[in-house]
Each structure stands twice: as structure tokens, then as C-alpha cells.
Length: 311
Image (cartoon, rainbow, N blue to C red; front, side, top):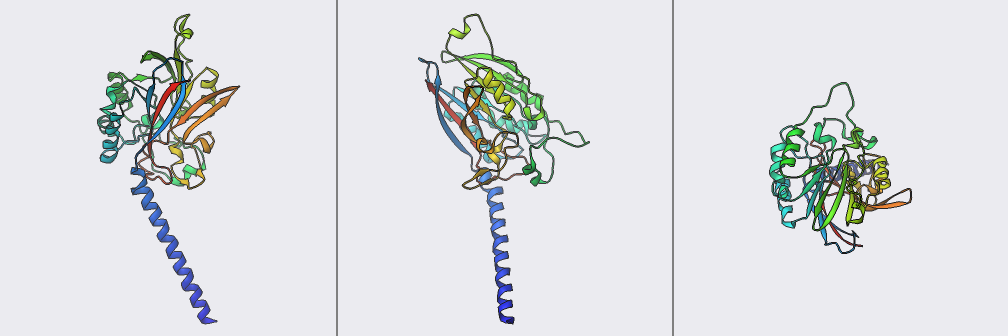
């Protein structure tokens, strides 16, 4: 009997040791490997008016730049080789007060292309150190008596603007690309309840007769925002914020979207339906993480290249 107990204790100790080792290995992979496995997701959508030329949109989101991220910088710079027709940046570019210069260095080649952008909460405010398991308890918001630290977002916005990128913060604007009119409507970050829908550009009395595409742009894909864009006549919706769940279960997917978006929509191209309308929705899993939770598991970072063709 004594031998049996000793063998059982030894077996339990071995099992516990193996479990701990597996946990350490998983964390190490998530923290040091997968979060740097930058990739490009390619999607195709036949949504352009007849006779339009193919349009390639590079969708960037949740870069969460901090100083000395050499691998991320090199990869972002290399995306210019795709030669997109348009860059759409859906926010959360920063994760450190001194990250603006490194961010602009990483995006410098892409600023040569036409672009539009909206902000996320981590453009305005620095992330805080907190229990990472709180992330799984519901949408993360800036709470508490201590005000969040403001980031130098005005400097970033100014550089984007001087490069010709259009600020869509609670505003709409049209641009012409390859003979097509793109009607954009963007909102400030819904995660901070700053979103105000400005409608889509109306243009002249005959504007609806010219070939055009309506694109809704937001950082956080809250359902109220997606419903509003859809009811407004959007043809395409672009958002980020979710990090694809960031820590996912292989074979199952995201456990949380960090908003009220269903978790199965936390990453990828789906169709959003409301009041009889159905609009393609692309949610980027993002490129970075908060500097206080620098892990990704079963959810590698991504940029998205959308190739739009005629209906």
C-alpha cells in the first residue's frame, strides 16, 4: 500500500511538472513568437459598380507601436511593396508616449499612398497596467479616479494630414480613385462613446448616378455603429479593435471581442445584416497588442489586402 501511495505521488508530481512546463512553453510562444508572426490576409469582394477598375485597399489596424520594435517596423515598411490604391487605418496606432516617431518611421513608405483614418482609444490615451484576466470579463474601458495619460495624438494626426491622409473622425468625405468616387463616413472611437454618424457625402443632385462606393470606417465594431452605417447605405464596413480575440482557443476561436460584436465575427470578412440590408464587414485582428499584454495565441497579427472588383 505504501509503495502504491509513493508511486501515485510521484505520478502526480510528474503530471504537475509537465503541465507547468507546457504552460510556460505556451506563454513563451505567445509572448515571444506568435505576436511577431506578422502576416497578410488577402480578401476579394465583387462590390464595385459595373465598368470599374480593380481597387486594392490595404487595411491597417491596432499597430500599438512602442519604441524599439524593429521587426514590426520593417514589416510595416515592406507593405508598401504591395502598392495599394488606398490605405485605411482604423486606429489604435500607439501604445507608448514616445511612440509617434517610431510609428511615423514605420508608416513612412505607406504615407506616399492615398489614405483615410479614424482614431482608437489608444491613440488618445496610454494603456494602463492591470490584471490581464480582466480582459475576459467584458469590454475594457478607462475607469477609476486617476485620469488616463494622454498620448501625442495631435502630432500623429498632423503628420497623417500633411501626407494627404483624410481624417474621418465623425465626418464624411469623398475621394476619386481610378475613375471611381469613394464616399467615406467615419466615426470617432465607439469604445469611448465618441461616435457621431455624419452620414455619407451627398454631393450634387446627380451624384447618385455616378459610379460610387460607400465605405463606413470605425475603430471598434459596436453593433449600433454597424447598424447605423448599414441603414445609411454603406457598401463596405471596415473596423479593428478586437485583436481577433488576441488569445484564442484552437479549433474554437475568440473568447471575447472586447465589444458587443459576436465573437465569431472578431476576425475576418463576414456580412453584417440589419433592417434588410447586408454589407460586407472586414474586422482586422490587428498588428500589435497593448504593451502591458504583449501576447497572442492562435491569433497571429495581420494586415489585410482587400481586392475589390465589379459586381
